[in-house]
Length: 200
Ligand SMILES: Cc1cc2nc3c(=O)[nH]c(=O)nc-3n(C[C@H](O)[C@H](O)[C@H](O)COP(=O)(O)O)c2cc1C
Image (cartoon, rainbow, N blue to C red; front, side):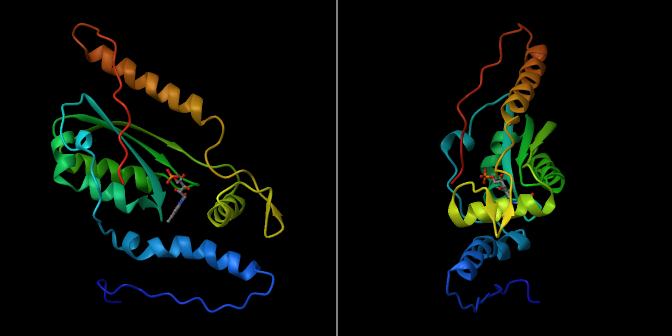
């Protein structure tokens, strides 16, 4: 297939009680992202000033998995000159949020950040409850409705999104990073976190 050609997808369906429509809507959300994501494309993103310049001791890159890899926006940032300015000669860490698949994404973030001159120190991932099928049904149901449901297509499903223990895990990870930073500080000054910076 010509890699520059955008695949076009047509859904032909008939629906009477709107069940087929629900499935189409859920699939369309995912498939709309697919071409650019699979090509490993970058896109135009707005990078906040704080993520484009500044002198940070540690940078934490957070990224959802999209089709196993980093999403187009975070990949676009990690390939930008702004990211080079921030990461060059600095330590960075990463976290991945996903339904199930985190390792390819985390490795890619590590590789892209290292290419921009950063020194990777550590990473963590957060995933959803349920096995392969039920976690996918939960996510598809969430795409369609924007909220958790108890059943989807007649099957009992776990709540989608992060498992409740993500808070403790995130705090423990944050503490570990703070300890590491403090250990490296000559005057043992406590580590200070700037506010989070999101891309859009
Ligand atoms: C377009 C798209 C593709 C996705 N692909 C995967 C995937 O391949 N593997 C996976 O485990 N999760 C996948 N997910 C689920 C997301 O990684 C998961 O919902 C994540 O927690 C979303 O984080 P966010 O709400 O911060 O964007 C996908 C989600 C979307 C929207």
